[in-house]
Length: 237
Image (cartoon, rainbow, N blue to C red):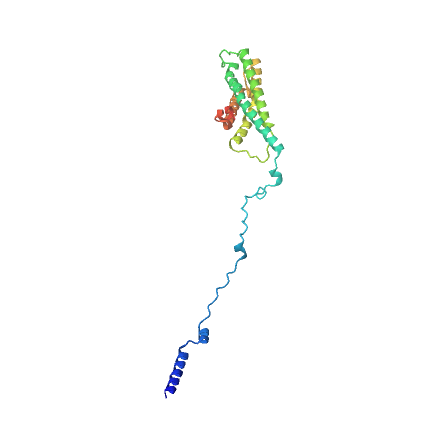
């Protein structure tokens, strides 16, 4: 009896131990398998540094529309510009010099004119006064046309537009230019009429008015481009 009871107790213990022990197959099937982290893929650009991008360049002159011919130095054009500038500087300086005998000629003009009215004693000008006035007039005319020649024969630069004071200066030349031609002619006519004992008449009587108009137009032309004069003419460059 004791042996039977011992066997029964041993069997019950085996059954209980079998029931309580975890089933490895069940645990393996029920427990999710640990997920493996995806292998880190190395990018071909991560291990190697990218080449640096080229720095932006400023547009070239060709990009801006200049042709190769325009970019090349032009010695002929430079020589033309130098000659143009040089001749205009001489034109300006001679123009100021010409103003001196012109003013003196205006002052001596009344001294070379017969004085007196009808019924009064006519005072004829002296030969010295006439000669001085004529000499100043000739000097003024010679300097004037020499001055004008430097502006007329200066090389022209294509594409240069004249503006402002230069246009005024050139427009006034259409006044004092003809005046410088007419003034000595009218003066010679007036002198001949006086020498013949005649009263100055006709177009010759406009000699003084034309001379003053010419001088005013000439002075205005100088002021238009040379005021103040010392900044343009005497300034050291």
